[in-house]
Length: 228
View (cartoon, rainbow, N blue to C red):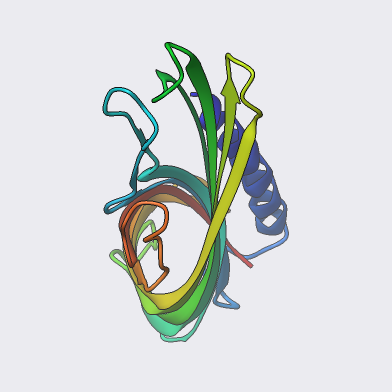
């Protein structure tokens, strides 16, 4: 739950921003056919379990599930109930963990291991939106295109004996693609609330961290969208 508190604060800021835009818009009819969307959820990456090599017993840090928050901007100028256009989005992910373990050669001494994982991706591509009813109360959408991803992993080791503290950092940058889809229901004249999923693949090299040579994952989000 501690990891999610910053995400809740970020979502509150994003919701407040989109609400302000919505108060001055004709969102009922998407007259200008632009929208801004806030996203809050988590991504599950494949193969991001880090083995602690200096532990007496098998120990690992699972950083594969990372909370995320972000936003998307879309334009769909063609059509009324069915619209085609473009989108761009960003997502920030973060996770903090800590484990205690007895380390090899330490004569029973323990290590307090603190880790942090930060990810950022920027994406954009094609976008399609379909209102399922004439009143535009329910919609489904989909998008996909190229993706740029950056990740930073840090570890801090504190020993209970006289061994000096150790700090390590690994980072990775990759290019790939994404695809996403979702549905939303109108909650008031200014906004729609719903759920979405997003799949990603990048060639970010994490072999030094977890043995994975790519970053592949599936994310799920709660979404709020306002038009302007």
